[in-house]
Image (cartoon, rainbow, N blue to C red; front, top):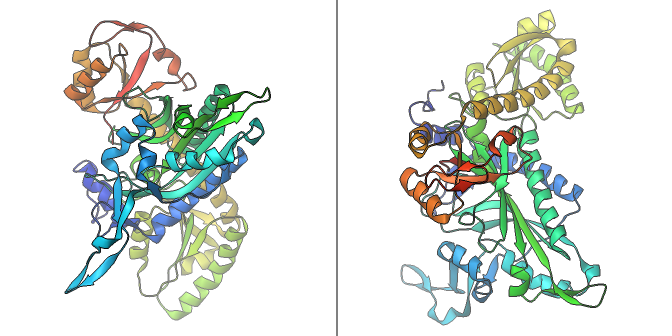
Length: 494
């Protein structure tokens, strides 16, 4: 256990903040509710961004950029949308400051004719642009993604998981038919699932949100739900079928091949820096951050160990070819040859930052032609022959990636149960984890469960989830006793 990290068993929330701090991922900013993403945290986000960006482009999407500022009147055009975001919007009313004695003040003469909203999400301004881009069926589909920042005025915040300003991507697509738009929505949900499981080593359940939980302005919201180590759920990504709501609000029509004018069908989908919070809480331990190799900014760190200049020269000479060989294999590797820190300090620092593999090289290793290799996930070590080190490390990184996913899946399975009665549900929800239970489909029952237990319906699971067939059975609602077509997924959540 690292001395600066609170054990998970004592205070999970403080443990999370300690891990963020010790891994130098982010700091609180002078603006309450915002964060400073430090180089280590931003490098992690860049790796996530690059992997997702490739996946988006492989499915035919292009990147674009739209303004940070949205005219207030745009939000009022789609009733559900404005109702959903009205309380989270930051509003700009003036355009400049003026000097006054002792500082500055808002210049009353600079009041805007129409207030501007700092982007909480971009559907409105993007669909205003699409009205000009789309005239004919030949202009469709439009498959656009944007990497940007957004602002949502949150009162209770936590680094990465919920901040007033955060980084994200938001996809916005336009289609000629409902079938194409629904297929796009499901396709991007699966992109998120693959990314979560194959890159983040974070197993997820895919499903559809209930009406009360869906995105404001959407017809259907699909999601991926992950389980954190404390048994709480994290909504890790969403994909929305928007129907024709925004097309009608912004009068976006196209002329089909028969000459008939029709409204366009829409989707939007997004993930954010909240994924970093999910990564931390899925894999990390009381020593600090644990990262899956595919996303780790540094996958391997080489730490030379020496007591004098002669040993230093010999060890570094031994380490340099290894450094080059690892780089030639595409490994993100760093040589920590800082003279002003002892090896023990370096080891602790690299463990706290979650570097998957550490290679220690001392004078005896040079003499004997081997190295010491340590795994961050299991905190185990082994001695490898120098000539076999590169191939073994490449294989080890793949093993760690798979082992992290296996461990996370095992934890989800162990903390997933089915319940039949409401009395049992209220007892079991205190243990945390995922609970599958029957629900009658009414908002009233859903609200009662949330009020009584602080648990929400995370999703109505899709058939594609492994092992989900056992939940796809009819029964009776645990609260009302009314008929239920299938079990849904409940949990307390972040």
